Length: 422
Image (cartoon, rainbow, N blue to C red; front, top):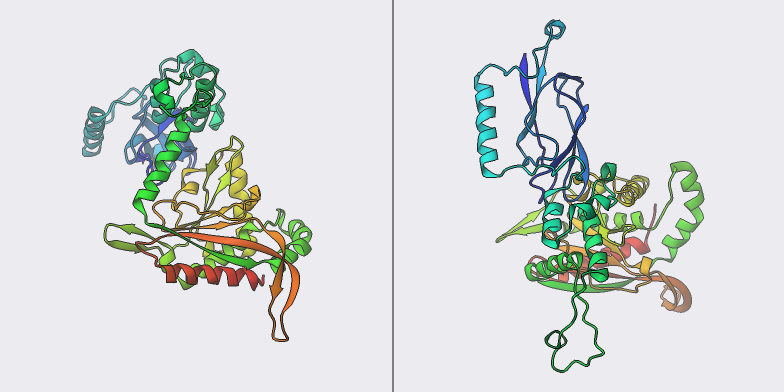
């Protein structure tokens, strides 16, 4: 018999713990390899923990509602041989022998729980929430009755960070809006000026944006691209593509493909900064800014985008966008991005100066595609025509990327779009 620890896995950069919302098995149950044994919730997404091996559930080290740290053992599985599996299993209440493995487990449990006591559920009717949500609830003075009335968008109706922040914003406008004083308005402001207080979500966005600006020396370069051929090809093939591949063909994967090809030529664009070291990433993982139904944004990541053709990119982009809208993204699907693309065209915005998504060093914004009268140059002479034009803007970290490198990269992206050949 072998005892196997099931640990809380690393779920992405910045995630250090998770709430066990539900055990899907009981002590004494037989489980198969990769069978889900627990549902967990982080401040970003919900997920499930699979069993690393087949065996019998021997012990749970945490209860539902408690918050283990990444790397901590949350359960123990007995991996049994065929012969031993026929023997009556010991009672779940019978402690295992004090071997070196058990001693280590008890020591780890004692050490970790002495540092930080897990957060329990208040009562059976109280919704299970993550530590961050619980902190916001406490700071905003939200009662248990209010919390129970909220409808969460997470797994099995769990209240997520976005849910509680949206409620805080609505609540502050309705019942908790501070009245502006003369000091708030300022000596020179007229009485007609309304003071609008930031809700918590807006404060968090502001802090993140300021942090990025304070971290990176932002520079933005612009270039115009003639995407007439690309638009024409997409319009001519979108119906047959959907029939063949089973999903819609949008322009987004074409922009991803153009950026990936340019990153191959200029790998320094695909890097991050660590002190005085530049970390050039070998994997090209493209983050795609995606709008959610509640008005917020999330950035799912297309991993190893350089290994996918146009059909593969299209399938992955559509899949991630759909999972984002349904709040079904896994932690790994929003982590590990090395370069980000944001599409301003959906808002009919011509161009913009996006803020770098830390710890990356560059972000590409694609403006609205509009028909314009332009001069068309050719070997036989210049002419005037109506073309589909878009503005590309690249914000980059001047600590790593100089104007020459940023300009060359942007030009190659433009050329890839103008010379589009599927």
